[in-house]
Image 1 (cartoon, helix red, strand yellow):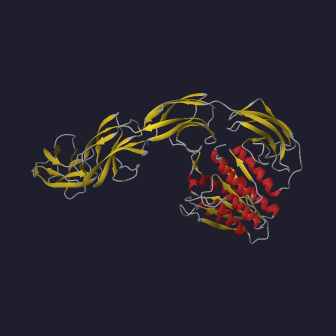
Image 2 (cartoon, rainbow, N blue to C red; image 1 turned 90 degrees about the vertical axis):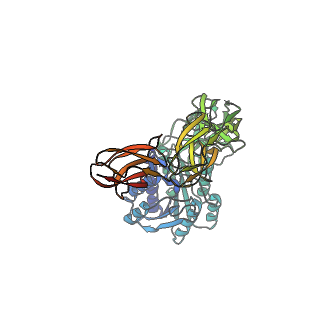
Length: 580
């Protein structure tokens, strides 16, 4: 199933679960939607907010009129504002037209105050004597100041008949999952995780069971590893058990709480007991663990457990001890293979999750030969072999990034729109550039059309000056703005031009025009109607790279005309011409 369909399924099943819960358990349901800026993120070519709108439309069309449903959103009005939380539809009888119009009007902008949103949702539901349920969907972390664990505890201490179920979809970071789990469990609710569309359906089925159904009776199960376990490698596990929807096999540390998981696989849902084999990847750290069969709908939830030793793997990195900024280096790495592992640069001594964006690659096999781009900022770095994005650094080695002997040289001033010769030296890459930026601007600033790519370790380039006068810098910029390797101040002065030609000429005859002014291949001199703006013309010529004259043909129409010097669509200067 495509990822956008998975997101559709998430909201669809979520709302269906809420409707059933409201009907059978007489609950008021508040749906809390994330409308923060991350909702413009793409899943298979579509934004998350678009997917959410479609899924809500599909589900509210089948919502039972006697069921109560509200809507709350956060981050939809202002950027950088942790108070941007709003009850958009009070809990009550559903007006489909109003509800959909409200959802479709959401324009993601801001922060992710998910904890405060749950607090506000609980307050909105407090006036009712019915059991209240908040269903929060999150694909990320709390970005405001509140602690989700503390908020969950506070709500529970207040004695409100209130439960928050949290569903994390495609939440890959363990610390972000932990935030969401803590918020749910501290209100007596449950957290469900799903990595893809199939797991999403299973997890939401488990959430529905937790919301409206009593715990199932105790049951028996068994788990047994098939072969030895190695870090990050798949392990086959044979199981027997009740095979209820939502049952899963996981590996955890022996002291982990019931219901906890690190990596996991759902068992095939058979409903009346069964057996089978699942396969899933092991954690990144070696050591002693437990294999567990977990049935979330039963008490106790852990039906079977057995000890498991996960063996380590060797890893190493071969690379130079130093490299020049913005250059390319060859790296040979040996270690575990996986789509979430990476080899690349991090600042020396930085935490396990640190990396330098754009300066890493995925392993291609047990032995990977990679070409990496060196960061643009000099300093001390580490080349790291990192498992599961940020779970463990299994190998590293120091590398010193050194400044190159870069320079950029040009005149101290140039007329606006003129072409200037610039000499430069530095690293070569199709993501480096040499050109103009406003004086004192940030490293990524540039003037559109006023730069060129280096042609070698030394380059002589012809670059067009900006059209606006002022103070600028000629810069040698690495990696599209990651750092500035060299710069020189340059003043752009107001453009001035002259044109000189005969005052009269015979119709259709050729004549010569001499000129001075900013020279660029896009500038031109031509014959235009008297007082015209250059949008109409009869004959014209681009300015040559060398020389100070162009030849034009007089119009066939007799009368008064102008000879115009045109820069970027604007007439810079003109002189009169009489055609006889």
